[in-house]
Length: 59
Image 1 (cartoon, rainbow, N blue to C red):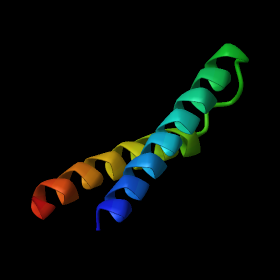
Image 2 (image 1 turned 180 degrees about the horizontal axis):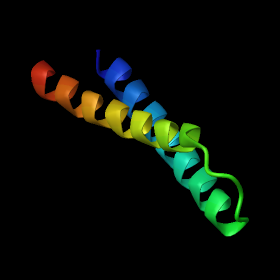
Image 3 (image 1 turned 30 degrees about the vertical axis):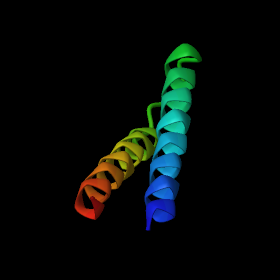
């Protein structure tokens, strides 16, 4: 079960980083705002939060 929690946490970190990079690129190059980047960012934060909640239930 700890492998699943680590996978969820790493997937969340990956999505969080992708969302930050895409948002930064959007602001720097003055592109059209898209809410998909914000959704990716929020989904990454949600996965990280879920992984910490799962870890507390295991111990």
